[in-house]
Length: 564
Image (cartoon, rainbow, N blue to C red):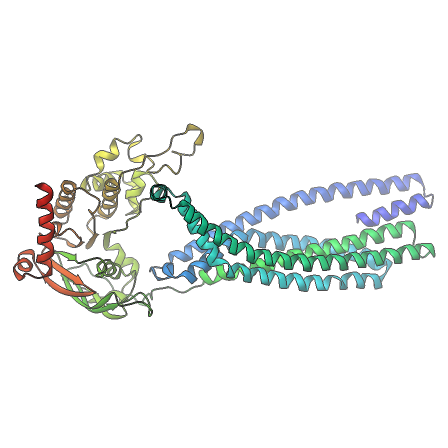
């Protein structure tokens, strides 16, 4: 419309048209400009808002999909982790997809308008200009495919770079890195990964530069040729000055709109290719099979049984558990002991059904764990993991994550903290249970206040993790995997006494390297190289004079020497 009105104004001026007519045309041209500007601003806002909403929804769907992965296998698969990272990039590019579609529509409308103007002047030149856009579309599509391939190619290196970068800025690693002077080594590794990524992207950028340079030359050749044709036609009286003006504007407009369309198509195409990773994650099936018709899980009344259980993390890895047969009677405390690598923590993961055994079965009162709902099973279990999490949240939230419903019941949070022996410590914090347990963030959302949180000691964090397990009150099974390894002997004794009193008459599985903490267990099971080599109560195992007795005497001698 703008080009057509400009033509009419110029023709009116050169043909001595009435001043009123020309002024009306000028006014229409001004109004068109104002409307175009307003439409552009409104369109940009709409594009941004649609992009934000699409990105938020895509992010929620992605992480909802990861919650459906109820086991750990996929999170220990490097190839899946690379795909997950690219899926997150797909989420980040989802606004580009939405705005690309929006921009494609706007560029299409612009192109139609300019093509209509150009057709009036020369159908042949219209065909030439449009034909020149075809190689642009083909080459840009190929480039977008290549960019997606490069993103997949450099994914592992980018993830390793992120790993080193996180180490260099992590408070958890800061002590060792500074003490051992390993920062330079890690920085060198990070830089090497970045260099590999940069080399691949540089090669892609050079290819893009060559292609787009050739396309720009083609566009300039077409525009220059068209201008020569228009000037020659004007000298012959075929075109007016306004026609030439509109022709130039139309050629530039068609080329600009074509370039915008191709660019938006390439961006959208690239986003779609990146979204393939997103779609692969979102549409992935469960990592652990869920029974189509789950069997009811009865309250534990007889016990748990492991029958000839074999497990390894993949076909390329050695067996971790080798034909384990074990019965955990209801209402008893069973202790699992053994050297590092014996398979104790792996057995815990199988009981929680974070993995399934390759052979054998695990039954709960005779019901195979694979035949019941995973959510129902885990609702019956409480665990303190050896590698428990320390969350950068408040003290109350750290405990309530064991049973999120207790956020609405502070009395249960405080009761769990009391049983874990951490209540008095938490009440003395600056904001009590509402104190943020990290210095990574400011208290609340007020950075100007300068108030950061509090960092607990290792033993205090361990008690907090125990409170998180204890807030899951009266579950059928409690698993304690090294629950007191970070505590001093007195605190360790106190914690075990508290848990023993609280869990009296309930079923518990205790894993510990410190044999003095397991001697009162009803049954002590000794694992060695993935097999059970001894089992019995403390007195029976000491009388047998096997490996347990030798290790207990060794540890006891160490305590006596320390006391002496």
